[in-house]
Image (cartoon, rainbow, N blue to C red; front, top):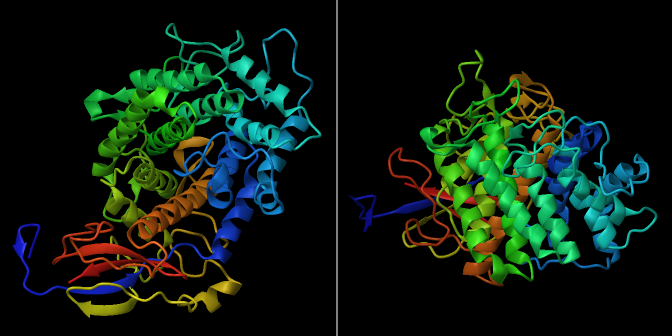
Amino acid sequence: MYISGIAVSALFLVCVSVQGLTNNQINTVKQLLAEDATHSWELGVRAQALLELSAPSFSVLTPSVLLPPPSSLNSSLNDTLADVFTIARNAIAALPPPPTNGTGQPLVLRDGSAGDPASIGIAVLIANWTGLGGENYSAAATAQLEYLFGPGVPKTENGAISHRVSEVQLWSDSVYMVPPFLAYYGITTGNQSMLQEAYNQVKLYRSYLSDVLAGGLWRHIILGTDTDPGHWSTGNAWAAAGMLRVLGTLKSSPFSRNFSSQIQDLGDWVAEIHSAMYPYLQANGLFKNYADGNIRVTDNFDDASSSALLAATVYRLALLTGDETFIAKAELTRAALFGTSATPPGRLPVIVTQSAPWPLSTVPSSTGPSPGSAQKASNAFTDTPHFTVDGWLAPVVNPHNFVVKGAQSPEGQAFTLMLESAWRDWSDSKSAAVNPGGPRPCWRGGVGPRTVLLGTVDLVVACTMVTDGSRAVLFSI
C-alpha cells in the first residue's frame, strides 16, 4: 500500500476524540450572544446562527432544504424559531410606518450603515412567511428593499450598493448583509429578478474587492474616505459566508435550473477565497487578524473569530458543492478552538477510544457520556484556552474597531455556533451517505470517503467517526 509515495506494510489506526461543543457549552454561547447582540449586524448574524443551529429546515445552507420554507409551523418549529421571531418583532416594533412614496426605510433607523440593517431582513421575511401576525412584516421587508435601491443609499456607477449611507464605500462585510436578504426576498415573493440581483451584487463587490495581486484575498474597505485596503480575515470570512447563503438560496429555489451558471460562479468564488486564505493559516489553527499582515497595524494578533467563520464556510461549501479541499484545515481550526489546554499546539485533542490493525471496518458507537462531561456540567468552560471561563470566544478582534483586539465579540459567539452546526451537518451527511441506518463507520486511512490528511508528523492519516456523544477523528500511525 502506498500513501503519499511511502510504502506501508502495516497500518494501525487509533481513534482520537475530537468533540464538538457540549449542550452546556452551546447554551452558554447562545446566552452570551443573546445578551450582547445589540447592533444591527449582530442581530442579523445571531438570527442566521440560530437558524443554522436549531432550525435547519429554514436555513438556506441546508442542502436538502426546499425553498420557500414551510409556511405553517408545528409546536416544535415554533419553539426553535422563537428567538428569531423575537429579533424580527423587536426590529419592527421600533420602526414608524414606512413611507408611502417608495423611498423605503431600513429595518434599523439612523444606523450609519446602509447594508447592516438588511441582515435582519431574513428574520423579518420568515416571520411574515409563517404568518406570525401582530406586525406588518411584509411592509417592513419591502421598505428595506426599497431603501437599498432608493435615493437614500449611494451606489457605484455600475450599481454596487454602498455599505455606508454617507458616501459610496464598499466593505467586504456587506456581502453577508445585503445579497442574502435580496435572494431570500426573491424566494418569498417569487421574484426571480431579485435572485439575479443578489448574484449581481456579489459579482460587483468581488470585482472591486478581490485582490488579484494577493492571490484572491479580499480587501476590506475601498472607495470613499478612511479606507482599509488590507486583507482583513473577518472580511474574507464574511464574504465567503455571504456568497454561500446566496448559493444555497439559488440552489434550493424552484428556479435553480435558471441559475446554474450563477450557482457555479458562487461556489468557485468561495473556493477562491479559501485558496487565498488557507496558506496563511498558522500551525495553531488560527488566522491573524489580517491574514497576510497589514502595515497599518503593529499588533497583528491571532483571531479566533474569523478563524471560526472561515472554517464553517469550508464545511458548508463541502455540503453544497462537494468541494472538500480544505476540510483538513477546517478540522485543525475546529480542534484548536474546541480543544482543551492538554491539546498540543497544532494537534488534535487526543483521547484513545479504539485501536485496530488494518483493515478497519467499523467502530461501535459509544452511548456513554463524553469524558469530563460531569465536570463540565457545572462549568461549561473550565479548561478551554480559546474560551474565557464564562464562555466568550478568545482571542477576538474588537467588532467595533477592526484593528484592535477585543474582549467580547457577539459576532464571534455567532461564528462559534455556525462552526459547530456546519461541522455537525457535514459530519452527519457523510455518515448517512456511507452507512445509512447503520453504525457510524470508521473508514480506512486513504480509502474511505471521509478521509482527510491532518498532518505529516510521521505518517498521519485521518478520517471521521460519529458517535452519539461526540464526533471523532481517527489518525495513524
